[in-house]
Length: 121
Image 1 (cartoon, helix red, strand yellow):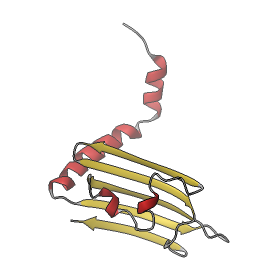
Image 2 (cartoon, helix red, strand yellow):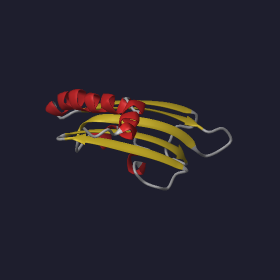
Image 3 (cartoon, rainbow, N blue to C red):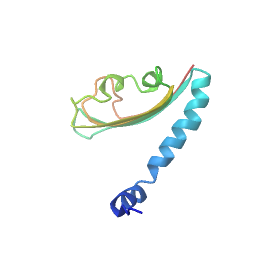
Image 4 (cartoon, rainbow, N blue to C red):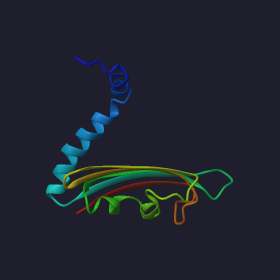
């Protein structure tokens, strides 16, 4: 038997990956069955600057998951025009989960604090 200690250590260090896969599969398949998706997000203005710190995530049908994100970051997911843009997506068949952390100037973002919840059907 071949021993891979580095792979085992890496797997133990990131247990949230299994949780993301299970969440996307279970919740996402349920939402995709109804051709729906859910999006949540929060944004806060950086003091004395024109920049925001925004986190948003969505899960649901693959072709609609981007629409559940806040409008001011939909086109910025996966782009490189911000100071920090950490965008991830996980696709399992007809289901997609998206996660974005964006720090930088975002047109149409809330002026102080903004919370976002969207259920699309």
